[in-house]
Image (cartoon, rainbow, N blue to C red; front, top):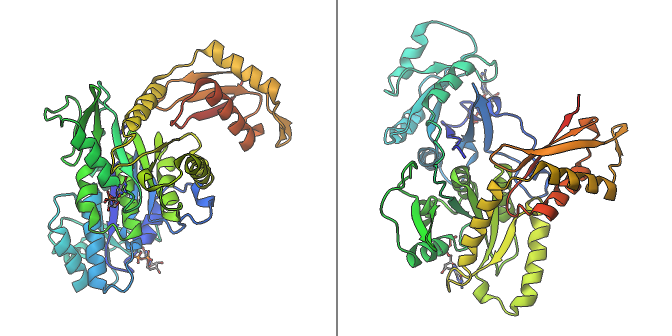
Length: 436
Ligand code: GDP
Ligand code: GDP
């Protein structure tokens, strides 16, 4: 799947970062946000302009307790430099250029990533001269905007989209890219060490893929895989991992690149909000996912514990019912091979094509077994359906009226499809169209 591209908004407090953020993100009601304990104050969101989709981060939302301003802004800028493909540096027209702005600029000078200057609170168009002061930063010509009045936002978005990395062409030989995510200390680097250390590293480059230096190609049973962001997890990532929102963003970046996400939790601890927040990201990005419970070597009475843990995970990650759960020890290297097997079976599931005749048999049987209830003033009738071409398994169903589809009936249908055809680990999409 194509990488989306990440845009980070930086700047000192009060210049209008979050106003700009809110203006550019697509309002998307998240299912995950309805789950208690899941962070509400979002610092990332999806945006779209001229058919290009990208993700926006408001670094102003990454706050640190008891830190002086200088330290906080420095960290925000550094995070932007590490995570983003494009950095939008916001300034305040009403206040002009300040020493604090210059300090942020000095940090940003070190990056090779594209920087776009946005001078905000430019509520009324003036003359060209208004730009001059800000040009002295040496970061190019600013784009004059007003986040609250909606001035210049189109120009800014044009500039962003222009600087976004080109879409990756999916590799023909489709080597699965695996991201390992999870809160700090669950054992991500230990797992990477086990996966990489055990198998011979492939040195030769893989045709048709662009690998970041931090990605590691590996091989298992003569099959190739790529582990994403290994250097980040092993070294760089540790710097700020204590900052919860930051480990969040790290995960976001890796998830964005991945074909398969391995969500790791610590088997010796109960599930926390930080676990579910990170899992929620993978769900929202609609990625195939494997839940890995680590440190299982430390757990007594394993058989009973497995049942308890599975129940706990299913109740905390309600939206990830389709994910397989594996119990491993990264430390002892036990059951590590199961991860590869799960990745392989996800790959198979992604390629699976269900015959239309078979699919319709299942649809008919499902409706006989459990006819749709009345909803929105009518009863759903599905006439026929079929799987359509898409990256994720996607089924279109032709019905009498799509507004009669109740959430729980959709879930029932999804369960029936999974019961028949598997698709373990993979999100599936059901679309309802009116038969004309
Ligand atoms: P942040 O701290 O950089 O995230 O800044 P905020 O987005 O919270 O904005 C700080 C203040 O500036 C708020 O009171 C906003 O309403 C105001 N503000 C933001 N953008 C504009 C703008 O374009 N014009 C004007 N006049 N006020 C703005
Ligand atoms: P990360 O922050 O998620 O990358 O976690 P690390 O890989 O750094 O591991 C955190 C701590 O847990 C380290 O002290 C590891 O030695 C320990 N650890 C990791 N995996 C296992 C495991 O499978 N069993 C045990 N007993 N300890 C583990």
